[in-house]
Image 1 (cartoon, protein in one colour):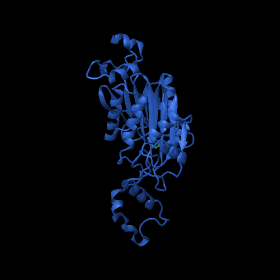
Image 2 (image 1 turned 90 degrees about the vertical axis):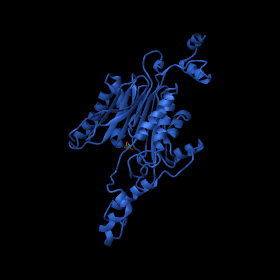
Image 3 (image 1 turned 120 degrees about the vertical axis):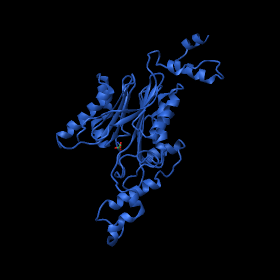
Image 4 (image 1 turned 45 degrees about the horizontal axis):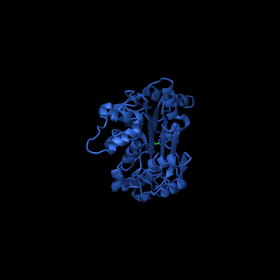
Length: 360
Ligand code: ASP
């Protein structure tokens, strides 16, 4: 009986039905048996975030995938975990603000199964821009909403406005503002300036730099469908209204259900100009592994800059996954190897990639 039923309905609807039946009357497919339509491939989820929150996010996503849930759901819920971490100064709540002290978030979502995409940019006061991007993708015929329009759309869907500027982020911003120029009037009076490091928040945040930070989350579900999301507060202290690569489909994120997916973090301006995520997926389509494709994109960007400034190397990190579950991760420069989170049925793995220009 059961066998006949499986044959006559889709794998997903079979799954929904089996989950709905109580007390083991039917046997759920064991994790070992979870393959994409018999191909032997398995669900998985990856992220560019490798801290504890990144790991928790992977477990949240995996929980969904391992029960036969969709890549879209897994990616959204995993991204939400990272967005809700107030200690993370690069994404969602607690993200560093723009130069005016306002947190403006960017996010994109792409569903390979339906070739749909949605994104929001310069979204204020909403903790989960990834969820709003998903709604743009699924409930509008547009791809990108910005600023006040993105906020009205979020509110129409019932999202509550809240202050995303944590005390920590506000103090980092103030510290940056006071240190910005000797020629403005921010900071302690001139006659006390050599004592400024005595104030508590100067001691708390001794080295303030512009910093990048974003997360990419990509998943493959039991049906072999791929979805991805990129979410960020963007470049810290950016100009008001600046949009980075994260909400630009093809730049901060790209998904091709037949090939794989890629996401970017780092200097968004480079990623936009190079259409880096699209390029990585395109290279995979040409037969390159995800690792090779991430490195190809780095080399392509460096090559462009070499023509105008041989010494300039920007700071990007790319992650990629192929349809068959291979992963790749590369960074332009740095001292520590770049890493990514990978969660499969075998458990959690922090996987290292390559630095393309290790001596820079
Ligand atoms: N790519 C993001 C942006 O430029 C920032 C980052 O990834 O660090 O907005």
